[in-house]
Image 1 (tube, rainbow, N blue to C red):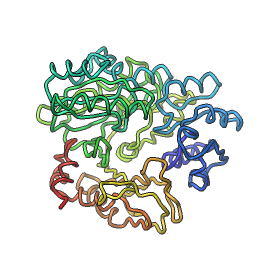
Image 2 (cartoon, rainbow, N blue to C red):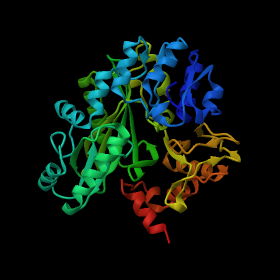
Image 3 (spheres, rainbow, N blue to C red):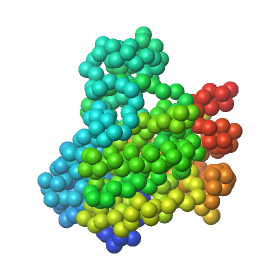
Image 4 (cartoon, one colour):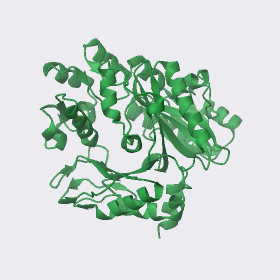
Length: 444
């Protein structure tokens, strides 16, 4: 397990159910973590700094080889979409639980991924035909597209290296800032430009492929975001017609066939609700943070299937076997203080009460006495609620958020309860700027 936190725990659980032993690598900051406590073997690979531990491919591979591992699961983030790391695993005789390195390289570069989508007949947002080399070149493209535009880093994800530009006078400064951020986060500051569409939904399609059979598991609506960071996800999307749902699923499968995809992955799109048109945005060549939403409505264990595919097994079901049942909503619980502009809130968890009951799932690595380190992402739990319909799922989520108690650190749970109670969310009329507008209108 070349990761940490809740995803390390999630994958260990899948491995245990499959009868697979786990070796957990960890940094000094995670010495007392749940993932380390649960693993069959744990190996410290460096200090808290990610670049010296979880992002250090040499140390991760050395740990795997010294312990006799057969495979490496990268989770999400860190090395999960690093093509060079995937190739290194293959060269060292280790199975990388993910797609081949060349596919990661192709689809991880957003410019080449756009080109692949075009070649596969999947619609893309109007934008630059490839990388723009400078702020001056970006100005030319933006002038032809019309404002607003969005600047995007070709590498990475998670909202980093992205800037919305409303006016020409702002573009140069935003371009340089986004490029620096992308260079620091992903080692690549290359940028491209797209037309920024307003009032849109962010909808993604979950894919599973064994290299021969490519299936989609329906969609997730991830429109509730703050600064391009997802806060709430649900499936199915309340903003899609059945015809569009089918069209997007078929397009995602077509694109994955075109690039020779194998493993779990996600095709991310934007949707114009009024016209019911969609556009390819990017692909995540890994398991997603929000994969439990899809697991709840399909009954398919995505992580187990990902591991089986990596072991050379074929998918045991067909597209017709995939049926969406009910509705699921996921809230990301972060150790952040919404009253202080969502500032990180590391520290000791003095006491913890997790919600339960019908239709409630909690993926977390936190326990009473756990110290949330300041070195990593602030996600401490994913709260997922399933219901026979959206109303029941939403009612269960409100109940579960009320049951949750975390003492010692601030969390986003109270803010999420207010967000889900607002009329716009309850009607399902969300879009990618909805949360920011909600914050502006609800803050004194």
